[in-house]
Length: 444
Ligand code: SF4
Image (cartoon, rainbow, N blue to C red; front, side, top):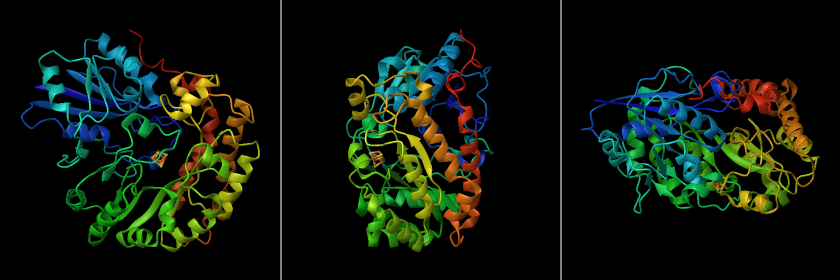
């Protein structure tokens, strides 16, 4: 019997004791999917610890630890890996950051998985059981999402998530945004799960609300139409991610509305059209944002609008202009970040070649801190402006002005706004020393 422990360490802000309220996390899919991929005849026990909702026990007993890392959590993941390996437990690392930086991850792991783990996971477990883990396991050609097992949601903590009903449908995005870590790690190919499998999984959940965490639900328009027409009879409400293009495709937006779409996260990125060109996000037309919001609201869809500050075209006035747009266009849930050069992205290579990267501490790559020299302001001005914009757009007065007349699902938008207000009010506490502090993990 092999004891498997699946761990997801979290950065300081998003940790269970950080500033990102419990009401704002939905259950992640990586660890529950990995746990489901363990072959049926492989005798094992599995546990999951997700640090966004609870601590990772340092006295954990396991025969194999598998950890997932993004760039912002990589240093903490490495600290855990060093600690558990010193205790004699083999550690496997995977996810976006180990895929982008496998040689770095290898220094802290018995094995590193690059790309998607589905194809190699059974072999990896057999090797671990035989005490013969290979240093590297990589995604193979011919990857498919057909036949993917149902994630083991029962292994997740019972508390702490806004919902555990996270369901994957389409993996990947073909767009060329220069800052995005996803295509840099996994390529621009799009993988579709058979519609009938997605529908069967949702039907079995017997859920009222479902979240699709896929990075771009409309990466394949005809697949999206087929999927959401098939979901309509299930009568669920759902939330997901799409590009701003969705609002200007009448067939798609009405299909979304009829199928139960209640909220979309949209990467609006900037109020500055030149900044959209800078990050190569041609799909976004800033002059359309008011109309976009009107169309989505008319279809009963709330919008989480995400903006990234600090592109070369951004001047110090960008913060006020963004807050103003969010209020006037009635963006239900604005989210602000700093454009961050994740390793191996085109944006990273540009800044690196210009000698503008000034901080290489991975915990600072949490998209709320500045790790490079901006073109039109200082790093301190960029951080201060971002924090101020967060506070301004989540003042009670701003929340009221954005949400009035409260005709769209206030049961959803109000608690989410209060959750984000808490985040906005505490964000400045997360200084560099707080972000980089992993002293709770013993150094072996
Ligand atoms: S549209 Fe979104 S997921 Fe796709 S490349 Fe751009 S930022 Fe990444």
